[in-house]
Amino acid sequence: MPRKNISLLGGYHLIAYSIAVAAMSEYVERVFVSTDSEEIAEIARYYGAEVPFLRPAQHSQDNSTDRSFLLHAMHWFKDNNENLPEYWIHLRPTTPFRKTTIVDQAILQIMNNSDATSLRSGHTAPESPFKWFRRDDNGYFKGILNDESMAEYYNLPRQAFPVVYIPDGYVDILKASYVLNSESLHGERMLGFVSPVCHEIDRENDLELLEFQLQKKGSLLLDYLKCEFPLQNNNA
Image (cartoon, rainbow, N blue to C red; front, side):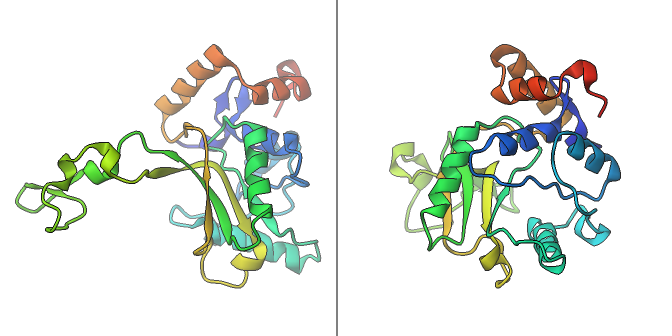
């Protein structure tokens, strides 16, 4: 989806929902947007986010990693004599529907665990991937565990397998002290935060599904946006 982050959902730009949940948080002190687009930067500022720099092109490629742009942002703080925050709450625009109370629970969870190197959210997988197959070069299905000592383990009931979590974009929290002094982003002590099932936007039909969900169930974030940025005055 071209220009995905500024697609309209409920009349508001997609990025506005992530800015709103951060603005409504009890613990988030400042809201920043990292982008290489002046158009997105202008829209983000309209909704109250700070955009003190444009992200360099080398950190904005299709194969650029989260670590790349986060490191750039952290170094910008240091190089410009800004107070470097320890906790960085990463809220991807492609996950628009969150509850502020749940984001705040995640923040408290990592702040109360000094040993954690990061926090990442995930929701329970509805089906166990241990029952899935891979397909070999001859076209035969094989169990993904490739363990000959467990004959046809994939036919066991799902209760025989451990609970598995699907990573999602509900909330990631990084620690600057770890990221700046290591070669990884999350580290070996990544807190697992169990989030509600959330829908992410990758394709046009995902946006249509969330538009339908918004019409049926509403959203506190949309209520906030309507209050702070009435559509009749929304010229972003």
